[in-house]
Image (cartoon, rainbow, N blue to C red; front, side, top):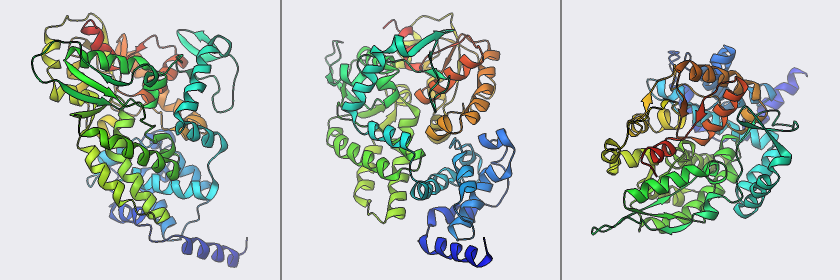
Length: 448
């Protein structure tokens, strides 16, 4: 390509970008201290400064100022980030590198489009009635599609983007199909009953149903009524992490319009999934701001609505630990012989600063902390799991080894995405440890 053509292309790129402040602000504030580099998940895999947090900031800043084209090389680099937010936690100024990555991915999606398989997935996530049928069919065709190998389900044949990975469990009906509306506690109480809502999350709705069932049992034991809003939608995390900002904000706005009128009658809205909780409390606001900048849409009305929602939204373990008598109940419960090791989901520990609460609620189990319990498991989102699965395996193999070396019988984490990734990693590395959500273990310990 001639120099003149290159200059013309750069000029066109420059004119297309309108005040990308989200990209420039963080990049200009970075002092290159490198505290973020050693803990970066992708840097730990490839040892390439370009895909370190400060490298990402430099790339994003150069692109924002029109000095760098959004070519395939930059696209591959930006899409290799796991969005674990270790860099944000380590940065002395807590620069939002994750938001910079997400903002750039919106431009990537705009230029290169959303792959067909993602379009289908994101469409289904916004059509709960259709998705119910898809998962129900998966359950009924289970014997034909899947085989059990060392306690894990795998496809009988390889499919593009799936390969030979471990498959999540399927159920005839989702959690929201079998548990919805007002569920009153059976405990007798002369006091005025408390009432909370549950925002279940897609993985606990369709694949790990016992998480929601366990939460209902615990709330019932505490004498708390529960509202499970049947019309709740996906939080939009898969679309957001892939740069599909339009589908993301569509789901955000539908959820806000639906959930907000219900909040007046609720003490809290509990989320038993770290990724979903972080979406509601952290990334919904980021997504609305990114859409405003990228598409010139005024989202001020929904940002105000979100502020109201945030005041009553809690990760389940945090609220149960801080706002109920569950700790006292557990003190009177039996001491378990079973040993556990705890993995800290990135969205729980790094984004929401929640890691002590679930451990305290698991006080009756023998805790054997694994090495690097707060290091990313390698899930990384849809793109990492499909197009960059080699990266997911590289990180996951280390996590599986740490779980094995802990000597625990059970590994626990308050996140369905981590569960999916860790199960796959343990199956691949022949680690004979079972995975259970902390709410499942608490319910078992209480004999529920």
